[in-house]
Length: 483
Image 1 (spheres, rainbow, N blue to C red):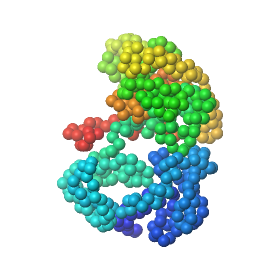
Image 2: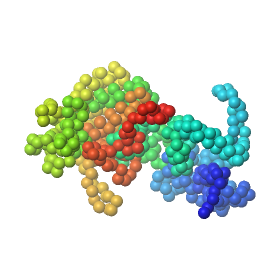
Image 3: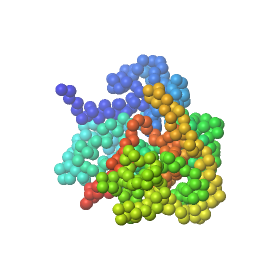
């Protein structure tokens, strides 16, 4: 049986992190500073200087030292380019001030102007100090241990850091990035994907970016920024709604907005679509949403004797379970009909009624975006959505498949989601996209991961994933931030 000491485990993890930066074999680095890490010449690697991490690169070695970097010209993603972060890899690898050993703070005083007075210590001291504190805490109450990480848990360490708190027995696994990850909820809830959704600019015509940018804010070299410029040259309209004129906004149209008021803008946008333009993808609403589900007086699904949500079939005027094989024409316009002595209404009409008073004039007073501009953008969004059109694409087996083609979409991100109404804004963007059938179809708003991730729950709607999965509340709270 192979035995590995705690010291050797942590040392190996540190070596692996350094080696991974330029894809240098771990064994060579561990042999010592006098041993060349790899043979001289060009070698292939992978840049990990940002959380994207999808830029293949090349590095040249002379006398065991990396002396030159460049993007891999054969890569279809970054096409031979590296951003400024990627080009700084050599400095990162050989930085004389890099942390090479465990560090201990020696100044007990804390404050902005206090010098922590870090000193290097041995692995033995680091492990014995840490393990003794962890042991005492565990014996008293494992919940007293707070395991907090930031984006430092990304990349090569996320393979085991996620499980450390569980193994220790504490629920208090915290991320220092806090509300930053509000970006995940709506995508997890409505599209069953993690972490976010993106605009399909390869087939799109109109992109409304609210509080986010489709490639230029991170400015990695993996082709996203280049794709944006290519799309603009091909005639794709980019409209950025943001308090500041970002680089991307300057390349399309910038719509200034008062910070934190994006929800009013989006609700007015939906009002115009529902009450003024009235051109919607009714087939998508019938079959890809719970819009035709009947809602009872308690505000929940009206359920049949089988416990399933019910739908009114317009073709034969019968109420049926959502998965009834005879269902042919789900009715979106059911208003206050009596079923089993209960008054029911379609979810679509209830949602529509919620936007009755959210007019552009109302939103202008809150967001400062002119009512005329809101109407113009909503009209352009619908006009360029390609309602009713399809596209034929090859599937993984090379077979032709016909998909709906929708060429308008709304995308949101951290610029709105870190505000008070951020998650509501993100969910509103899903509503607007779905009104024209622009969720998870070519040209529309797509989940950023591939594969069979969607699955229905018992009520026939998308099963929430990751951070949107419901958990029963526990009292008293067991987590320090009430998670």
